[in-house]
Image (spheres, one colour):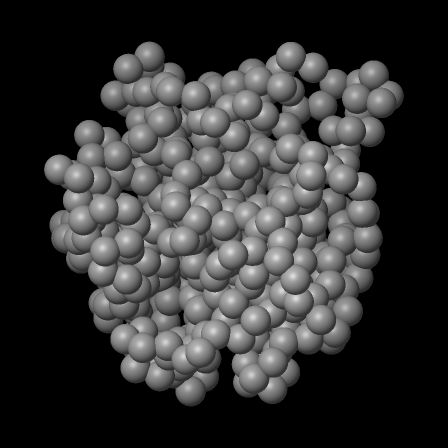
Length: 402
């Protein structure tokens, strides 16, 4: 019980340590999600005054339409750092949203979903995606809509869930961390199948990274609690068939030991397209095991999706500038990797580019800078071009073609 309490306190207050600069939460007014539709409009979802609001821009983020209110009533919504509302555009043009409502008990929540089938003019009455309605942790939702393959149009929602921890405690059995659960919809979000468990012993407060194989299969990567409280990453492909047993594979081997969740999830992108698919691009933060934190770093590696063997990890970013929260995007052999750093009170987004599938990289370049608070970087595509989206306190939403 003392260990669990310590973990919760760490997740909420982020007690001062050598790794705090990498893990502290962001201002909730900046935690947004964005997505392009097929017509090139940029859609944005955010939380304001307990409401989920959606608006669109036809001029690459310079101006936005009047927001459409999605939630009928105000909720306490997770909207800071690793937790934020999510948006995705389906291949049929539907707009999908998820978010986490915080409940009365600490660290508890429900995962909500809504969709628009009329081009964002209105959104349907929100629903809770999980059948389990206990007042426990269902948090840190992630949303994916398959756009290719046999699963085209399938909606997948993942989240961190503590029902198995509660059950283990009741039975007097040990249990590390939380678990990853998911729910899927094969009818464009009209309804969801009962949720399934993907894996036990996930970290408690890090975002889940999702991407798709060419056939539409969803791959997930999350920070995991390995033996000895090593907080490395695990990967799994979400089963296509109901009740199919998922295969989990360890993806990183930094062996960082920390009795708490670092609020620092990974980035994941598919490697190759169509018949040329070979696996995944991964980027993540590792805190090292030295007391000073000097060994903390960001890493990139390739993961072979068949043999589940990763390439040697490549360090990137400046630890002294609090390098953190990377994002990845791939289109064929072209791969973009961006992250945030802070220098002299200025927030900066730096990036690297690879034109050979991540085998080699160009030198890091400064892509954008803004004084004051800022969100984490987001990568997205429009008309086969990569874009960086970055929400800042001083300069608003910055959208740059890469």
